[in-house]
Image 1 (tube, rainbow, N blue to C red):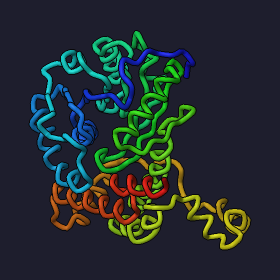
Image 2 (image 1 turned 60 degrees about the vertical axis):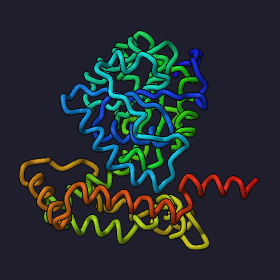
Image 3 (image 1 turned 90 degrees about the vertical axis):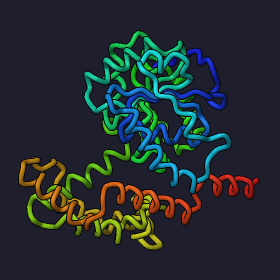
Length: 331
């Protein structure tokens, strides 16, 4: 990142107008999140049916967001769908880009957003893995471009990973991190670029191993999912893998755990390279997921997932109102 300062037209706490570019699952999830936090949201998507799909997504998310607690003034009526990218960005105070994961598309789109957005306004990309250095090459002002990587669904999963590129201004990263916090997110601000960031690299390692197991007939889709939801996933909801493994060392903590179990890391239990995604593996994954769904539609599964996330957040004291109460008690 560069240490050059950029001039922001508004403080993170004073943002009122947010623009979301791309209205798919992630972009639409961002729209729902920002609406629930009381922002005026302008969205744009090039798909002919983009607006209809977006409004359906927001409507589907709203019951869960209502359970979480809506900010004062929050309303689905504060969503405007613009007819063009330029009109969507004309009065933006923050821009969240969520286009398909194609590098050339990201480069071109970010350059267009840079040209259309008022000077100094931060533009964040929801990319799942591209470093911003690789995406900001065509923009006239790359200093305000950065990564704001969410997790699906963005309106429920708190985490967002923030990272700048080589030409991103350090104060733009600081501004974005603070804005996301104000917007109700849990922020990890990375001090260096890392393809895939942190959480995606961890979950992709698990995903690759799952694909190998299915490809080799070692486990079914349901067995893999059950092994997480009935096993380590219960711990990971409130304690990460490092502290979890530290507890495996008993009173000796991580030191004893590494001394005792460290040698087993050399055992060939896992495969780091992904398997070939051929038709047989694709069919096995699709059929396995259909079987695991047991007749539930995607909409049914989304509702079940959303309620499950809310229940976990409530049980671990991480609902917005619970966190505010905890801060008050601490004071």
